[in-house]
Amino acid sequence: MARGQQKLQSQAKAAEKLAKQKKQQGHNANTQKKAAQAALVHVCVVCKAQMPDPKTYRQHFENKHPKNELPQDLKDIAL
Image (tube, rainbow, N blue to C red; front, side, top):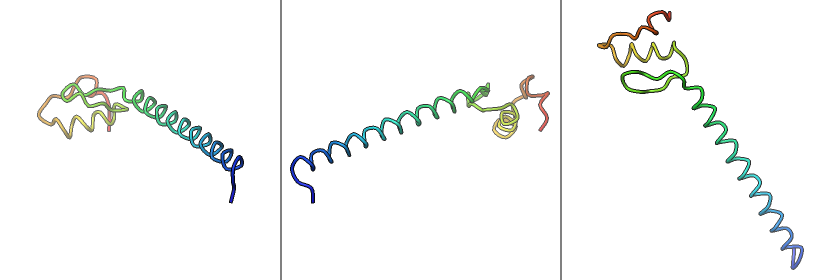
């Protein structure tokens, strides 16, 4: 078992390693969130839900809003 100065050095080293891991983990999570948010470019005109591509947007619109008329930009998109 470590005693005295060796124990303090070990604790400081472990705390520094843990802080570095937390910083790295937080950075990755923020980067992923920003990338995911940037990918959501299509916004539903009825419910304001965000979708990544027009095909998904059309499927959403047909399933969630069947009574509403399909927007012009979605009429061209084939499923």
